[in-house]
Length: 394
Image (cartoon, rainbow, N blue to C red; front, top):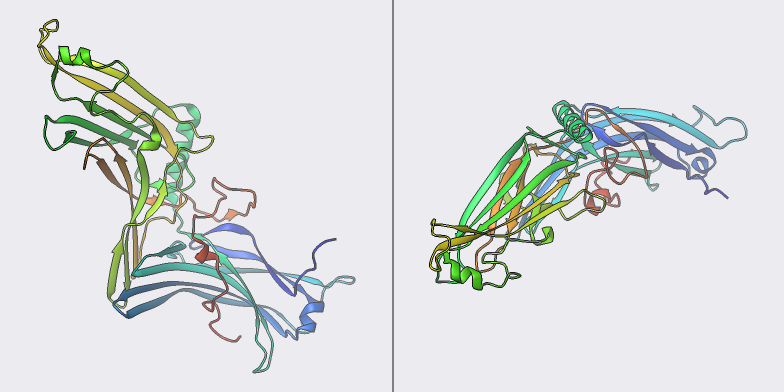
């Protein structure tokens, strides 16, 4: 037996909407329940707002900026009836998002919070001062239109499908480290290779290569021969990707009536994904002499060790954006740990994240990744139990 149809229900045509495009769908009315609840009119409202809070001591500064406000009336009592033998009426709607609408967003910290939220609300109007209107609010996920990102996404997809080669940008860091407070320094070198692309579109496999090389402090051949074959020389390179931290984090600036705060929250930690292609290449330690007298016991050289990790990452965060009260920029952060105090090597690369989408995406309830998936947003974004959308009785 099918579930009963409520008085008012809302169905959206897409799961991901794009700035400058219409929000479309249908409102379904059950006339029997509408009449029993004394609902005289039904209209839909499209609302969007950016809200920021910044705490300074005991004072909380709050600022709200309206982003979109659009309404359309769908039904009035006596204006339309369901077909014979049915209690159900369907009313399509279409409301327009502004072309400069920022992406859906939600973040909170100890002294700040910021959100950009959108919702479509169907309102059943019940006349009388003591009768509350009926509201059904459905959160919307919105991203900016991005024609440039579409071209990047198509290029990356085509290169991966054909097995072609990528053009790379390399970030490099070299550090001198030692095991303790005294002793000779060793050298560690870290490369992070990323595709040479201007923007990083969502829902697109983005390849990366991490290479880690260590060069031990000089030691004689006799000491080198005394080191057990199974024991890595200091500093050992990571032999598993899980010991390396590769993440996306944001540089977030928040303002409320001129009072500002900032933070750098982590957005995504790129762990080894299920089903993802992941290559690991660990080379055995290699003795490299520093002088030509290779056969002399006192000849010095170094041990060279190297690890390489190759895979892809896929982003599902709100794109990079700037507005009056919220600025969200992103960086890729790589941390490679080595034994000893303060011997971590870090690389940070600023990246511009874009939607890679120029039209609304058709809803697919089974989609958990790829272009049909929603943004990664915290549960607070989907909460419609508050009063944010109740801007008026009607």
